[in-house]
Length: 275
Image (cartoon, rainbow, N blue to C red; front, side, top):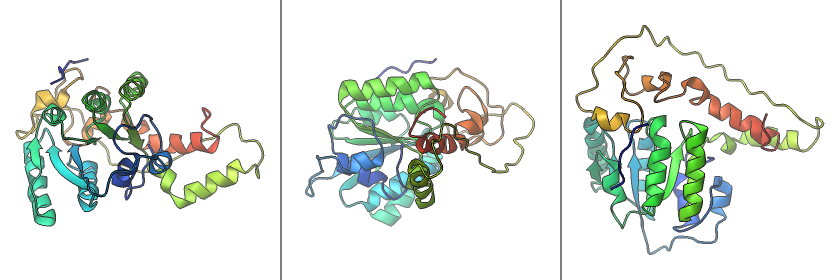
């Protein structure tokens, strides 16, 4: 297994389809449109074995989408919170009739030569390393937004995908919204002139995250594994499975939580030039 060291554009209904259409062994980092147009399509007689990492919230959507696709088999559900992972497997069995294997450590799945696809819906600080390890192990990867905790890590993802000739996609979903597509087409048609600057705003009132404190990690969580490649820090916010967004070691605040969607549309609108 790799050593643990410290230191996108998919519609919700097409995550599985995009990976399937691109097929094992493709060599690009791309959006869903290119993936769906790829020449290599999985045989109808084959099933792609899938592992989903991080299944409390968004990752559970991945699980359901892949399980509902007849060309996929959800082989692993991975979560450092054993209580959540086991609950998801019980729910999965009731709905789909079989039980995926549960692993806390994603590397156990990466060691499986029969595993084809890995999706990553963990906290931000795990996104890049999980994707890199998966591609090094020969898997194609879908990484939830943001593609990485920082730009340096994102560059390493790109390099790894090219080196190992694997698919690595990241998702921001806004490019699948009909209204956004129509607006960008209108802007790029030149009807409002040569657009050189774009600003995107999102008004999304949130509750206060409260006063800083020191809290015990959940007993069902392997906290050392959860921290993973980040610097070991105490838990200082009460909502363990979401408040990591507001800690710079693990998350990026709302700029890389909600803001990444707005920045993506702004860059898209001006032809992917920096805006």
